[in-house]
Length: 200
Image (tube, rainbow, N blue to C red; front, side):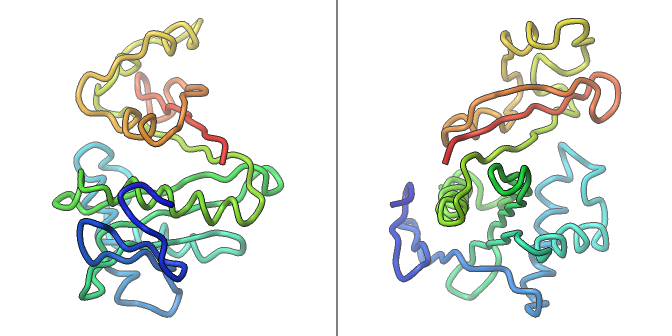
């Protein structure tokens, strides 16, 4: 059972409308292009260097077709892509990276992201995955970890983290992830990557 949705013949039907969750297929150019555009739109404001153009976004999408990876999309009744999630195997398949997760800005806060995470968890569980992990960057001062020198004790700063301006780490906490670490200066000085993980 997923949050705000019900399982039905291997897909999730959202209670908020006729939204299905399906595999992103390498021969479905229409959905691939919609997913790439979605990545550019979803990350433009807070991570402008991630998928700054269509070609970069298409490369990111195509990586989801690598062996062992999962790419899933949320589509509406007309088949339009509303959200995207990816899973990438690491650590001999025991732990997978959740990357990327994006929902069209006008469809955010409607349960689509939450249901995409639940959908990926189910597929990871079926493959014997033990842990999902992710990195969530702070490039524009949305947490107390940004624009400060986290050395020499990053864990001390991490223990006192606060969300200043809608950073997504709190969304991930709501779906069961916990903060497990931080890479200081991952995106330049004072721009850390916050690591989170969840047992599946």
